[in-house]
Length: 344
Ligand code: HEM
Ligand code: HEM
View 1: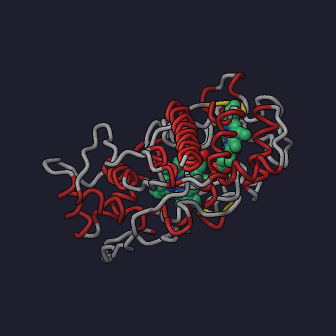
View 2: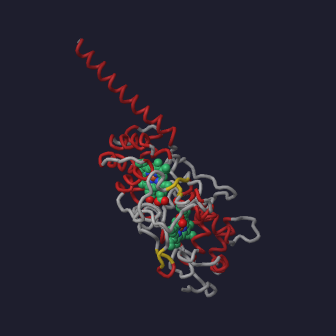
View 3: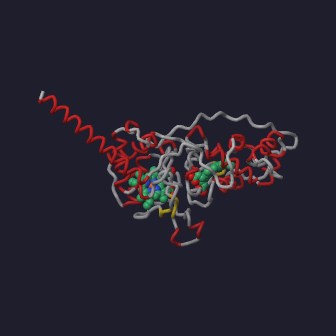
């Protein structure tokens, strides 16, 4: 009897201790990270409606938004492959190779600014960039608007999405519709379930990896909802990587601010779905996530991360891979005799 009660007490103490440790880890994590919210995030000056989401989706998938009629947003941000193109740097108009790796559009709505250097304030400002970039879609705002106006179905959808506006079909509204669609591309992950109280959502290796991620200092730059995407730091804060990882030509935020302090400064990359979006870094020159983690240790923290530690951190990063609601491929309006012909 005595022995049984001893066993019971020991079991209870162990359970309480495990629970306490789990709570401690969660309390510490909640100071640094936030779960994905349960509703679609509101966008400034751009009310969300179902019809606008559907319009944005059509535009996201429509290759006729590019001059050649070949490239859609989905070409480089393929929703079937983690919201990126899995190439070192993207291929765009005329098969040109762009200068940077394509980041995922999944959860991009939670970044404080868009692009590796944060040069676009929000998703609507961002969406105007690729359409006009010579190495991406190489189009002009006028030609986009002419293309949209040539298809009565698009005109109807713009009218319904921007009620009461004198000129609903505009380049601004094109960007706003895409912004609203992108705001729906969020992927709740096991890490969110765990932050919200589900102890079983992370396994032991993932919990050990989370602890390391915080103890080593990764979380000082990779925090918030997206574990990154919310601050700027020199890539090579402690030790500058070689040109095989950080090519000299791309000076990051320096091109935006023209301040010497911003040379080789980049936005701390958001880390959700990171195990789906190789290759890594703005140069796209590192294919292995474990190697990317060890490079970060050296370059940003001056720390050698052992193989075992890197495995645990990679296990934790795996818990950031979430589920996108099934994407039904949209049927797009048919072109008419007035639709501008593809060029280039
Ligand atoms: C960056 C959306 C078309 C390649 C981004 C970002 C978003 C986005 C939201 C920023 C993500 C972040 O900073 O984390 C779109 C939309 C498109 C489009 C809505 C269609 C209108 C394309 C195309 C290509 C492309 C066609 C490839 C030819 C890239 C690259 C970046 C980027 C390389 C990073 C550029 C930099 O940081 O300088 N895109 N994209 N995108 N996208 Fe796209
Ligand atoms: C990029 C993980 C520490 C700032 C990345 C990437 C990973 C990562 C996997 C690549 C993301 C991608 O290609 O999409 C880690 C881990 C860390 C750590 C595991 C701890 C060992 C830090 C710290 C800072 C930082 C302490 C700030 C001082 C950045 C920046 C980038 C980045 C600026 C973008 C680099 C680029 O321009 O390509 N991080 N990171 N990281 N991280 Fe970290």
